[in-house]
Every structure is written in C-alpha cells, then in structure tokens.
Amino acid sequence: MVYEAPLKGYEDRANWKVLIPHDKNAKIEGLDVFQNYLAMEIRKNGLVEIHVLGFADGKQQTINFPEPVYTAYTSGTPEYTSTLLRYGYTSLNRPTSVYDYDMTSGKSTLLKQQEIPGGFNPDDYTVERVWADAADGVKVPMSVVYKKSLKKDGNSPALLYSYGSYGASSDAYFISSFYSLIDRGYVFAIAQIRGGSDMGEQWYEDGKLLNKKNTFTDFISCAEKLISDKFTNSGKLAIMGGSAGGLLVGAVVNMRPDLFNTVVAQVPFVDVINTMLDSSLPLTTQEYEEWGNPNEEEFYKYMLSYSPYDNVKAQNYPNMLITGGLNDSQVGYQEPAKFVAKLRSLKTDNNILLLKTNMESGHGGATGRFDALKETAFEVAFILNRAGISE
Image (cartoon, rainbow, N blue to C red):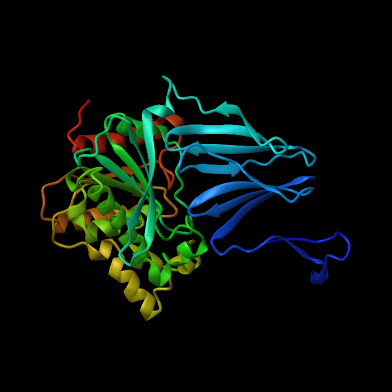
C-alpha cells in the first residue's frame, strides 16, 4: 500500500490518502517518484511488473515485455521533472538491455544491449514458463529455455538450477555461459521454489525455519516435471546450486539420488548442524532467523533431518562436482571437504565424485575475469562430460 500525505500536516494520519491500495497478491519492491508520475516495481505472480501512475489523470500504464518470463527493474532516473523512466530488462534469451520509457507517450526506446561476442539471435530460442505441482499441491513456476529445433522426446540433456533461501528470488535472466550447454542441445531451467520471494513474502515464509523442507520437495517436483513433460530424463538431468543453493542440491541428492545424473554443488552449505552450533562464527547467530536455533530441540531435530552431511547414506549417488574456497568466510572449506569424505566412505556406485578447492578464493569463487571464466568452464565441461558430450 502507498499513501499520499501533504507536506504540512503529514504527522496526522487523518490527512493521508491511499494512492495505491493493498493487494495481497502483490509486493511493491521499488518506487521512483517524479513531479508528474510515480513508477513502481510490483512483483505479482512471480514476475516484476513496472507500472507508471500519472498524477494528473490517475491513470496507470504497464510496460509490456516480449518474453513470458524475464527480469525487469527501474534503474533510478535522477531528474525529478523527467518524463523518461530508465529501466533494465533481460530474459533467458534476451541479453541485458537498457531502455528509456516515455511516460507521456508510453513508448520504450532501446539505449544499449549487452554485447555477445560472435552475435546472438533471441529468436533462435524458445522460452517457456512451466508450473510444477509441489508435494502439498502448491504450483511452483519454472523458467525454461532451449533451442527452437529441440524435440521434446525425453532424450535431451538438461540443467536445473535454483537457490531457494533468504527470500532471494531466482528470476530469469540472460546467462551467457550456459549457452555453451543450450547450443549443444541442453534444456536450461530455473526453478522458483519456496524459500525465495518469487511469489511474494509468504513464499519465503513457507520455505524457511520449520518449513525448510518445502524448498527441497519443490525442487524435486520441478525435476519430475521436466521429465514428465519430455524435456529430459533422469539419466540426462544435471542440477546446480551454490552456497544455500548447494545445501539445496545436497539435500535433494540424499532424498532422490535416482532422479539426477550429475550434481554441481558450489561452495555448498552442507554441514548445517555443526556450523549452526558454533556461535563463534560471525554469521551463525544472525542465521537463526533463516534456519532456526539448533540449541532448541525442535529446530535441532528438524535441521538434522535434512542437513546434507548428516544424511549421507549407503546408496548410489549421481556424478558429483563439489567446490570450496580456502578463504571462504561464509561456508568454511571444511564443509564441502567433510561432505565429500563421507560420500566417498558410504556411496555404493562408481560414479565420479570430485572435490575442487580453490586455494586462493573466498565464497564468490575465483577472482579476476579470466580465472572466473576458467572456473565456469570447468563446471560446464564436467556437466558435458558426464552427459557424454565431447565437442
């Protein structure tokens, strides 16, 4: 809800007027105030819409976008009297672009677009929004991109990615490095699971603390949806997640190892109990709001029931690449190391299990553009190798 108040007498709420009424199905994520217009970022149904309200006539405009799933955001227009709103737009098949939107005429003008070496044609790819049925009946959205020539016969390799914690939304945006996979016939999907705020604040609340397992079962449902819709099969499905997203893939691979061929867990938060019990770590106590306080029995037992390290057991696991950073201040290098050691002692398969520790990096991976590209190339090469793709 947005109110309008006079400069004089604003202290008295009786003088306030409702400018934008409350909508339980929408979340206002940002406002840009102009002399004659109000621009709003509103998250609704898992997507950010940009609305413009004219003060003179009270009419609202909505900026139209070409793809069914995307990321859009206002980028801060400093001139108060301006009639132009600057915003950014990107999607799974659309490089990041900057536009000026004329709030008087309702027209957008492209100013700049991310350059893709070698050229790029968005029309060569199909973007879809797919909805999976979660274990409790909730509809979970996924953003999917693939080459238009791809046949949905269940034989294509696929990569499913998500995060699902801290209320961070997994919006669809252009990731150039994954086109090394897509152009080789991969389906790439981003799951907007609970634990993020993709579908609003309640979406986050339903995927944290004692509801955390919804994050994992949502992801499993998304993987099953990709298979049932003939995008891929379990023998060709790879999954990836980093940090709390590494917790996600670590948890689901314990729960459903049969569902995946390959797992890439980047600096994964996998030793939940031991880390959360160590209050000397700088992040631990503030993390109680996300995971719970393990010094309380109810939270301890619940966290123990999904902690990836504590739930490794004697069973077949997929191919796995697990990374760590020696100087990581958020997920200690010992977490992925312990996880790999326990997997090696218990797993009953002959699939590849790699631990790759960067002896110079922290939580964000390799520093420097070229070192970061090499790290990404290694992960992509591992995924391709495990699918039997050598060129």
